[in-house]
Length: 421
Ligand SMILES: *Cc1c(COP(=O)(O)O)cnc(C)c1O
Image 1 (cartoon, protein in one colour):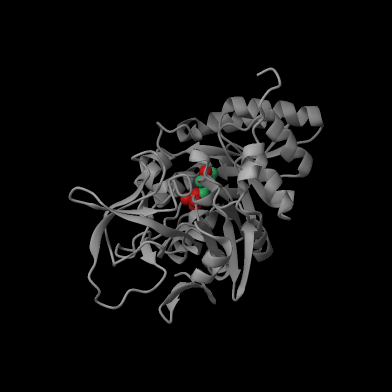
Image 2 (image 1 turned 120 degrees about the vertical axis):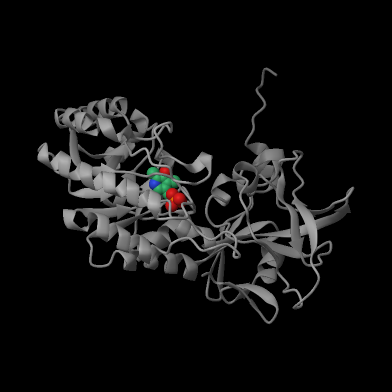
């Protein structure tokens, strides 16, 4: 459920007609709903009610300062995957003790940054990383709290670029080696083991792979405790999928996910951490774009928009589907026709949809890509020297630009021509 609905024939973000925002801000732009973001956070919080838990919002899904601050205000911690995200989380007011640090390639500089500023835990992904973190912590005279991310060799049944829990993926240490790795960690005085971490992928549409992975984590918890380790915390990662196509069967709900977590892990007495990103932000955002041209091709018609792959890369990168709807509600029963929906970028990959059935549209009309709040703006670039797409936040009838579109002067002045050229 989201808060982008037609009212009196016009698509609204909460109480605000989206064409009004388009007139103010220009197109393309992203628009997020506070009510939807809040609702999605609460669904997870309620799903784990009665269990000691922390929801660590995976801010790589949408790292706008305002969105991260909202999550913090709701009571969330944050999962970060870079020093930049760590600093941004802190700037959004998230205390270090609520930040978990994931990622296979944390540098020593990033480790120092987080240890100096405060950190809940590092999710360590390899033995070389463990050695480096131990060194850095000892040099700073502190002890780094860690979990080890295990790779359970489970097929997440999702797009290959966002599956992370198979043995051929670069993530985590093979679960079969976990006992040896924990034994080694226990000998390193700069580290303190606090738990286990697992994250098997993104946009999962079934609970089965999660359950397979969490069952292995439960077994590992018992084995590690028998080996004398303190396992107080289980970080179960993110990955619960969202319905990108309204017509498809809906993925499991956070409530069902929470019930499964309790059933599989409830008797271990561990604090549960989860790291949802997409489910919180995905359907809480849309990308609004204007039709530049309708172009008749041979045997197909192109709808050319002012948004492009640099603004929303998911279709080009993951062959992802986004529902596309006009901002002015089509009359009921109006005849639809197939369009290839494309952007202006000079690549054939700049195609949002092929043969998409759409109601009649004309030059200047506005459309919205639904489910664009996660892995949208954060993956945008200035390819083709197109300005980074702006972001707008709506709460009731409040509207704010939470990232402005850069001017062409700003963009041009970021480059320098050397004096010797
Ligand atoms: C990407 C990622 C997440 C979030 O995944 P979603 O599918 O957006 O919920 C959580 N944890 C880690 C370690 C990640 O890399």
